[in-house]
Length: 81
Image (cartoon, rainbow, N blue to C red; front, side, top):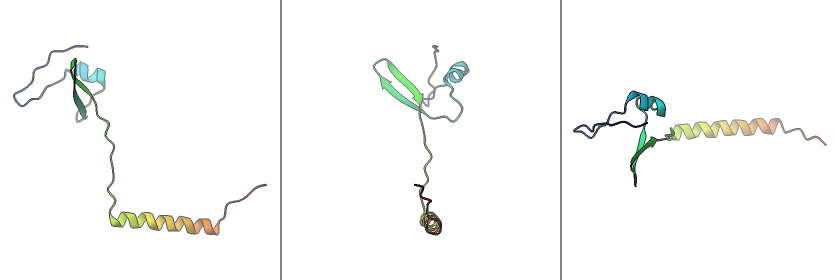
């Protein structure tokens, strides 16, 4: 699929709806723009959410691990011959 698009004075382009639909691009999706020998390549950017752990959150993990260790001490694994 090919389309002619215009760049605005602010450097913005609008992709035609059929092209966005064919590529599965939705509003607010992130794209990577990359220069190639053939021109500019647009491809989906995969983003992965991350969590920055606060000291309180780390303490929650430590508490949960301690509780789990205590449970395993009271309930040793069954060994079968």
